Image 1 (tube, one colour):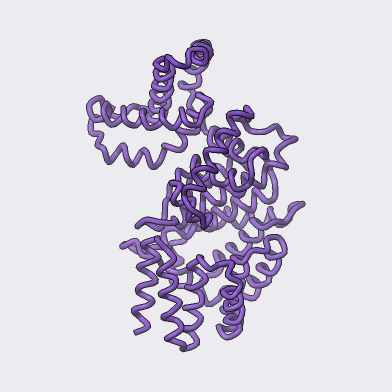
Image 2: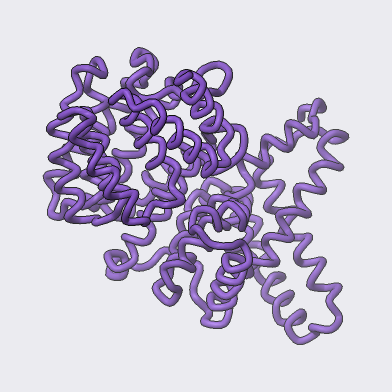
Amino acid sequence: MNSKVTAETISALYQQESRRVLATLIRLLGDFELAEEALQEAFASALQQWPVDGLPEQPRAWLVSTGRFKAIDKIRQQQTQRKYQQQWLFEQDEDSEAFQADEANHQNWQDDELRLIFTCCHPALSTEAQIALTLREICGLTTEQIAKAFLTNPVTIAQRIVRAKNKIRDAAIPYEIPVPEQLPERLDAVLKVIYLLFNEGYSQSSGDQLLCAELCAQAIRLGYLLLELQTDSETMGLLALLLLQESRRHARINQQGDLILLADQDRSLWDPTLIQQGVQLVERSLTGRRIGPYGLQAAIAALHAESPTAASTDWPQIVALYDVLYRFEASPVVLLNRAVAISMAQGPAVALPLLLALEQSGELSQYHLLDAALADIHHKLGLTQQARFYYQQALSKTSQQAEQRFLQKRLENLC
């Protein structure tokens, strides 16, 4: 026992473990709302007890156990739900010995997040509901953050999440990993949410900190679990992409937390072990039976990772890979990234019409990175007034403070 437990220690543990504790509580309690309340009560108890009693040897096990019994107490107190109370409590009492064994062997809980993702991504739910629910329950994003990602209002997102939870409850959707025969039809949705989970950690949508190492680590861990479950080329591609992106984490920000662009990063800070693992997975992915968007994105990331300097990057090959990627994923973001690659391969004058066409389409009207790219291209072409306009536009469209500081510096350097 460690008697020096502060509120800051518990807050840090909440950031690291709360989503994993929640996933296990949902499995044990079978109810999203009950599990969320149990999670909060468990951490409230920790704030009261740990500074006095010390940190438990297994904090996550303590939190799960405390949350579970808090939920049982709550059900016992709900006198208006006698029938449900009696049935549920009987099941809990019958399962008490099994839970104690589960608690003692808490290593088995590592699959709970994966089970929860498959539940949130059940085909009975719409794609929008799957993503919103997963971002809320797995990533722990607020409804406001999710609304920003969907370019919609928080009320719509909140209603979508509530309906999804009700659907899971009313349809008795099982909290489990599907049998192997069902995995192929469920895999793409799960890959997408793991990808979104990593992206939120790699570049947080709001707040002062650009990176969240815990979310990135969580996504990578789930990627490994999924690969063990299904050795699929796109699963390998996704995991490769995450590892290659993660390899640059320590070079992406300076000591003040400010953003450093890829071209300006100190490549000696890149993690060679993660790069090696990522490149090996890329090679396996591209020789698999199905080549998809994650494998192609990983191949692009591998070209960056294997370039000793920014100047030696094989930009023509990257452009060619974006051409193939667009056939799989015809999104405006792919076109934006392709245009940036073309600017590096063929010059800013060639890329400018492509970016202006994207702006005119309106599909990325709220996406600050398009404005940032337009500002950069105009600056390189010596068009300072237009560059200033687009930097100001980009600034108005992001609430991420590290990005705001970066854009503000770029704007000031134009003067």
